[in-house]
Amino acid sequence: MTLIEKLKESSAFIRNRTGEEKTDIAIVLGSGLGDLADELEDALIIDYKDIPHFPVSTVPGHKGRLVIGELEGRRVLCMQGRFHFYEGWSMQECVYPVQVFRMMGIEKLFLTNAAGCVNTLWSAGDLMVISDHIKLALESPLRGSNPDELGPRFFDMSSTWSENARNTAKAAADRLGIGLREGVYMYFTGPQFETPAEIRAARILGADAVGMSTVPEAIAASHAGLETLGISCLTNMAAGILKQKLNHQEVLETGERVKASFSALVREIVRTWK
Image (cartoon, rainbow, N blue to C red; front, side, top):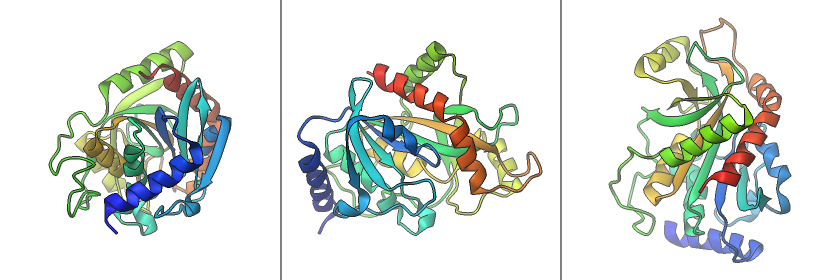
C-alpha cells in the first residue's frame, strides 16, 4: 500500500466518525499541555490505536487520541500527544498525522511543545511563538519518493512559520495581557536532554529554545501547504544555565503551572486566526 493510499484510508476513517463538516484548525498538544482538548464542546474522541496506520504515543503526558469539537466557535481537531523520532518511529511516521490533516482538507496547523529555554534573558514558564527553526539532524521526514499529491519534491522553507499566524498570536497575547516571547526553536532528536556544550552551540547559532519535536511536523506542513503556527512553553532552563540536572517531571510540572494562561491564549488565537 502506498503512502497516499494509507493517508486516504486514515482520513476517510476519521471523516466517517466525525461527519463531513470541515475542520478549521488542527492543534498538536505537547507534553503537559494536553488538557486543553478537554475544553472542546460536543467533543468526539478517537484513540490513535483505532485509526488505520496511525502510530501510538508512548511518552508520559501524551494521552494518544484525537479530540474533535468546537472551540471559540471554530471546529478544531486536537492531538493529545504526538510522535517523536526518539520513540523509534521513523521521521515519516512522526509526520503522518500532519499529512492526514492535509488529506482531510485542513488548512491551518497549530503546533505546541514543551521546550528548554536557551535565551538567558528569559525564564522557565515563558511562552514563545516560533519565528523560525534550526534542524541539524540529518534525517528528513520527506526522504524517499515524493508524494506529489501532498506537495512538490523541492519546496521553499522561508515562510514555514506564518507571519500572519504569528501576528495573530502576538495580538491575542497583548489583548489578554500574557507575555509572549518570539524566537528560534532548535530541534534535537533526543531522548537525552542536550549537553551544556550543545546548548552553548545552540545559543551561538541563534536559538532561543531547544526541543525534541515540532520541526519534522513543520517541514511536512510546509511541504503540504498548511499555514503553520508554533508556540513553545519554556518549561525549564536548558542544560548548563542553572547548574542543575534536567528531568521530564519538571517539564510536566511547568506545563501544569502555565496551563491556564496557555489555554486562554490558544482560545483567543483560535477565535481570531483568519
